[in-house]
Image 1 (cartoon, each protein chain N blue to C red):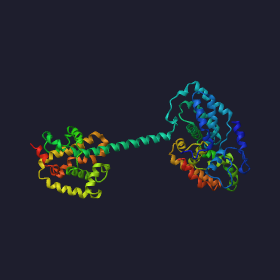
Image 2: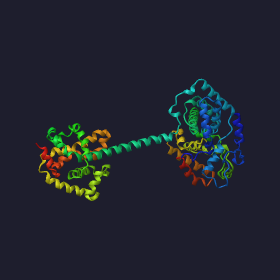
Image 3: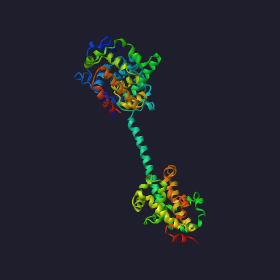
Image 4: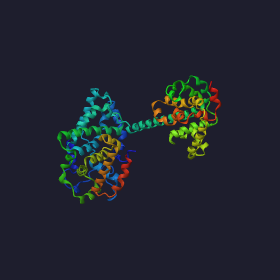
Length: 205
Length: 289
């Protein structure tokens, strides 16, 4: 249960990540570097969805806190992703508060004019999405849906873990992720998605 | 930072139209097979491949490691784990707690129904003994009921041992009263005593009529209220009270219906000395000095 929606990519790393975190907690800095390399790409992608181009700076702050509080953490690799995502999110929200900018606006406004027309999206999606285009798509979602989708897809959290990061009930987060993915699928013109999505999301309950 | 920027350019940051974007990413599942066959997993893989940049900025990593070393030097890593730092199998813990709660409710329920059964069984038991005790009980049974249970409780316990005898009219009568009290609901109705009652009545549907018939018989026996009151109370009154007492608060709430009923003196007041009417005239007679 709970792994239906996790990206295989992060799942495969969980064992390695858990071992690295355990060694890092004993003081091994190379293990800490390993853990960093394993979780940083996903966290950065998530934070970029929240704060846009400031994601690198926000993540630097987050890592200072992660490094400082590592001894407090208890859990395995999957737990470490959830824990670090919580810290990263707090730093991102702090950043937004300082900016007094709505979270998704920051990601949205920069490339607002670059949004492609719907006709072109289908062909493009079948090959690969550009980072910017994917960010635009996700940034166009309502905030709760965008976060739920990002935590699930790029951080690789299951439903309950994502709910804990967001401080919401698992059911609400699951629904938000489902709606967000469905909407993205419609925007991409991928016909099969709407039929498949409920099953997969239900598995992450 | 600089690395990220170049990476961003590579990924098409400056391109207004994504059609011209090179498929720069080679993450797992980034290119689904077939045009229309993008399922949910394919979409998620597509998004992950587009959003995650695998290359890590070396400078940022070094800063993080430096922070880690500084924290290690400062011995900050021995800090206490707060609630928000504990990510150990949380779901299982919640499940365990609710499982424990379920189990304790279940156990409490079983214990209470056990008390109920014990109360019913005890009503059956004691009429032989109380006869000798009539001397130290007080006159109006209803009035004394609250005061006596302490002394009488042990008798109920010992009385149980004598309980295994064929169901008599008195048993039936007590069960009938308890049945009324329970209103046909509750766990007590599943007990062996109830099975006997329903068997005697010829089926659950007939219990009420059967009990009514029993009451009529009893009405004819109420001629000797004086003699019957005391033994009847002793026999039927205490066990219920004892059961309540031993089971504590929850017992009083949940157990009241089934277990308090058979022994309760209220029944006695209404039926007017049932003990005397149950076809056991010899005992009250012997008890009376």
